[in-house]
Length: 244
Image 1 (tube, rainbow, N blue to C red):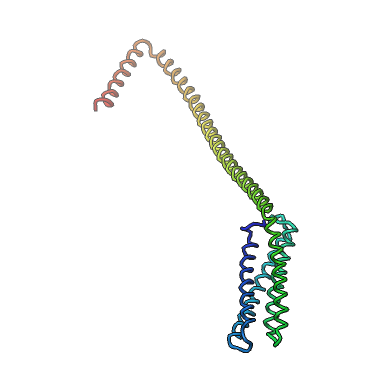
Image 2: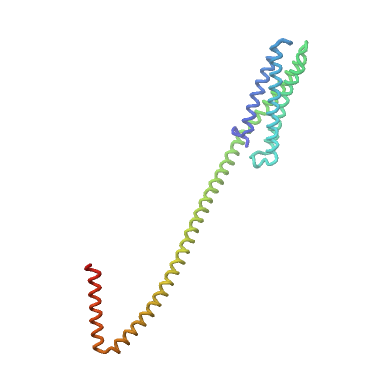
């Protein structure tokens, strides 16, 4: 996305600063007398700086090639890509002109150096024109970038809300499953209790029938004896439980 935060423009500004320093050192190199220790030292420094800037421009070109494979993903268009390619070409030409002049050296008439100076001025003017066009479209680019960022933020917020909703549904599903398992366990307990009650009721009916049969056979005297026996047993149990 063409904005001040775009990595391309950050690297571009760094490279441009290096080129400006390179040109300043080149002008200083022009004013130094030839075959002096200072000129030799500055010549080596200029050539090394040219190599470093060439490497940075090459890396920037590689990044542009990657972005060109899917411009939509990076939020740029073909016009922006062409503008970036044109700037790297201009930067490479500026560095190449300085490197060529330094390697060729200064002749007695100074014609070669003057020609290189004119080439550098032409390239600089061309770059200033590109920069003016870039600033002219910066407002529209910033607006498009702002809208794109806002849409991305909305999409991100919607994704987060969907994730939270999905987590809530999973939690509710887990609670429902737990309740279902608990109900099944309670139903099993109720069924077992019902079976035990049926069994107990059957045994109680059997005992009542047996007692009725015994009472019938024993007669009145036997019934009185049984009542007395049960009363004595009750008293004994009461004493054992509550008085000891």
